[in-house]
Length: 448
Image 1: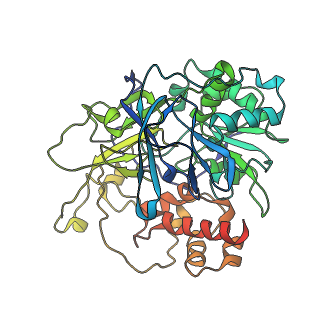
Image 2: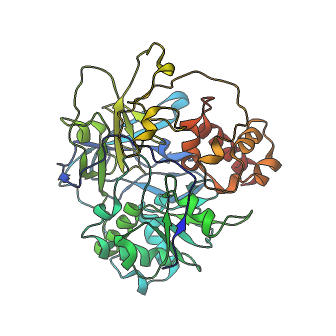
Image 3: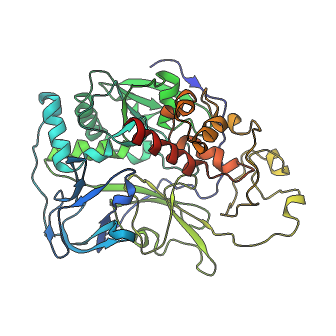
């Protein structure tokens, strides 16, 4: 393993409520759902209707522009509804689970004995292909492309993020099988980003890069930037840790197993810990009985507090999420709050007295602490982003739809999570992630 790459820019947000290393296995939820809205740029075409009986691994819908990319049932049962929104947009396909529904049989094989095309076909038919994302753009990889390399970050530095060393305990052999499968999909290398004393250091058939530093050091985009920055025309793929486990189980057993571990975190959780359930489970099934109080509003987020999606109890967990965060909604007004010493407030700019206590954790809420202001160049973003790009200039190029400038300023290297910290600390309250996705969609439309 090479010498650690030390990143100094960034910020660790000291949010109270990180998960204890305690795992609870939940019962199979009564319903699960797959949501096309979890996949940027996807135009779904349904393969099932309400009342259809499906097995785990049966296709529910596919990508209109890549029909070979299937999205399959995370658990068997009966399709009880296909929920739609405006202009009949498909929002979710809901399945009433049945433990006796069974699973589709796929090929059980050692990936090292298969060709790259055979591995790809297995991932496509089983519905595991959507777990493979491409950079640039952070969208589902095209099966027609071949990446320079495949990157996997084995640690997460977001607030109260899950510890993947704990998540993969007892599953490293399965992880290795998933790695061996991914290695067949590229002529380059599978590259792991690790941090500190990592359980992943023993994984074979990979190149390992070590990183140190504050968030966003755990973001795969940051790791790509510091080892092999993307140029126009370059394509690399990225996969999350637990998604590699899905792939390993597929080749190990010949069946899909979408069992996933989520960290239930945040200051509003009574006993923050890990829970094992099924991908696409209802939010209520992982939060019920675990919240401190229901006397006032709480914000439940599928994902972390920087990039996650606000959800309600009746919603379903996000496809790519490994965390549920619960914080106070914070719809309160604090008179002269800006003039206080701020001993109980976290400050990204260290303007409060709380900066004298770097290890203290805080019960932060969803208050914006101010309104929209002029979007000016202040140098604030550059202190939080460990990349050699100019984020403010990039965002302004997106706002004026200047494609040439967007290319020159590094839009190929970033997705929403990479600039999420900039949005958190922005004094102008700019919706950085929304603007960036608008720019990315423009690049996809114009350049493909």
